[in-house]
Length: 249
Image (tube, rainbow, N blue to C red; front, side, top):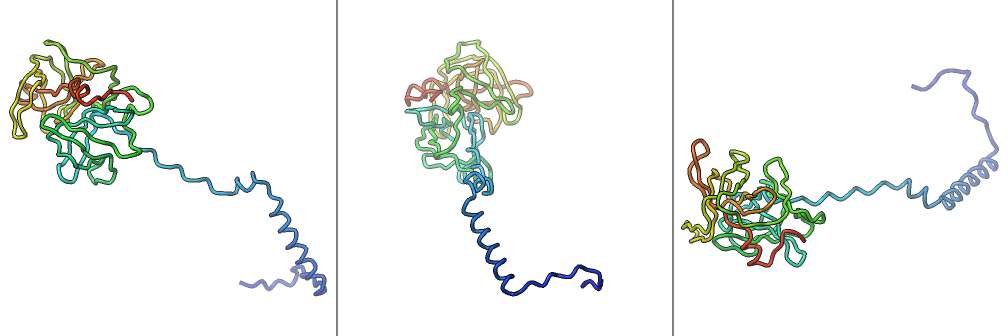
């Protein structure tokens, strides 16, 4: 609402020529201040750039998803010539299968570049942080736990072995057989490790460890976790040596 008070101070009435001179002087002063602004002041006034999103960290033990072959567990990360690769069970999907970190298939991590009956090799997309990455400490994810590794080994009969089951959590048992053979629809697989651990549907590919040593990954199983069970593991060492891979960059 417009004021109706009569005691407001009157606006000074300046001669037209004086008003023009004052306006010109004000404009010149503004230009001078802009021209003499320091780079630091200009930088302070500029909005800060938005930090780039951190690349996704992918551990052995993570669940990966594809549009054609459902989900599967990434077993281990390994390196050849400094480049990261993922090791997965062969039944997870053929060469050319694209894998994502989420069920909505929005975070692409890589593509299976070779696959056989026993295992497959995943080549990561640029920018994916395949742990161990720069810290060079091999690790796998066992549920909510991160298990750090010191190397890979072949177990002995009677040695303890553990993996993380998608259904039952951490399951441990003892090794009861080496160089085992099974026949499944994808072919015959040799050289497996047999143990008294139990496994469940969805555990395919779960990394198995003994202490701080990587042993292999879940390949097949029978029985149940309420009474007894048997799990067959694909050993890791033959894959590393056969493909020229190491657990550290």
